[in-house]
Length: 462
Ligand SMILES: Cc1cc2nc3c(=O)[nH]c(=O)nc-3n(C[C@H](O)[C@H](O)[C@H](O)COP(=O)(O)OP(=O)(O)OC[C@H]3O[C@@H](n4cnc5c(N)ncnc54)[C@H](O)[C@@H]3O)c2cc1C
Image 1 (spheres, rainbow, N blue to C red):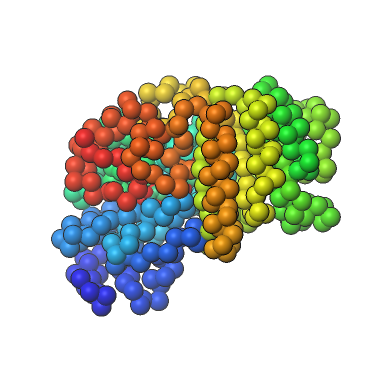
Image 2 (cartoon, rainbow, N blue to C red):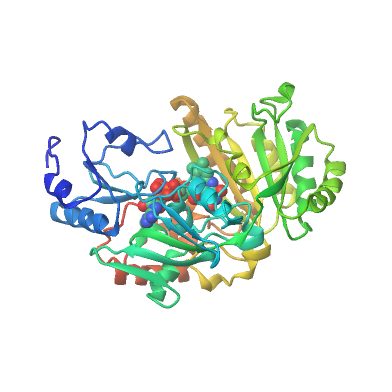
């Protein structure tokens, strides 16, 4: 292969387009959300069908090229982009078809959350997904997928009914509870290791279209007070309220009073999926205990809630992330969180704490491959983000140091695979635990014995 190689045989075999260096769309395809990732695939296969995916896999096999799969391009460490390899770009496969009677959605493997949410909300329906609408359904779901609906309806994978998968040898199968149940289990948490998912089928729930946002913002000097108070209040929120704690800088958004734009602090968030009265009643004692600097309490469409954090995590920003699971949020951990928040230097970096429970905790650990216990109470995401390279390196160190400082409060060394910025075998074994890792590894040996899908949070075939 040379740089001038135009991959004519792949071009002729595929319905979708094939991009090589020099093509006008090539840079747009190789660049992903994380601006710190700058790699050059030998070829990008923009797949429009399972048959296109099979052709791309055959081409990679014939030429001995490494394969990577791009869903929404939001994987932190750039698993979507193979240096000098073949990128299977699923972005043309972004259709969402909703059956409102059966409450099911069929979603293309390259769709974004924005497309999923918009199509489902046309029928007043939704499925749990992430909190930023430009994230890909593919990677998010295959790692687990949590968001505002998780306390009510579980993870994205808990609502997966079936998946259409192109395997490493090019065959296309459907995985569900009845067909290839081992593969179906592995897809629900095991990442992109087992094949290319060209279509997800989700069960949907009635949601909105109007939901209720309550965000009470407390300034940085009282960060520990804010986190502790929110923790105590969130221990007993009624069903229908989804809580979160965000160590952020107040965004320059129209709903934030101008004099507070950029103020560092902690936002205690309650999203209400029931009535305005229920939401107000849940919020009132928290407001009183917090004495917030300012607050944003308003009804808004569910799709707007899903877009609320989009601008703070814009495309091309440099990012480094680590996650932790906590069973408790003891005062000592709260103090660490408050202290670490005061030391970040980029206003875009953030600490997010999502209390779990509710529907999340109703699924048995062994039912899915998800790398996290269902009894775990908190997911902490430490997100370092900055637009320029130097600040990015500082924030990366801030993330690592914060993670180390919080480790004493964490449940073992495990973490959510979708919040990893590095994923070696040791870290993955810790993320899944030995038993799940071994089971995944046996399933990998059955469906991808040659480890064709290796540019990912890679589970080695047994
Ligand atoms: C701004 C931002 C916000 C986030 N918010 C949340 C959140 O609220 N909740 C949450 O759970 N996670 C969240 N995440 C983490 C997110 O789940 C992961 O980054 C996820 O990997 C993104 O998936 P993607 O398809 O966009 O990424 P990609 O980089 O395209 O893919 C990530 C991995 O999944 C594989 N993959 C993707 N699609 C497919 C497919 N169809 N078939 C086979 N393999 C596939 C890829 O090969 C790669 O290994 C967020 C990430 C970012 C950057």
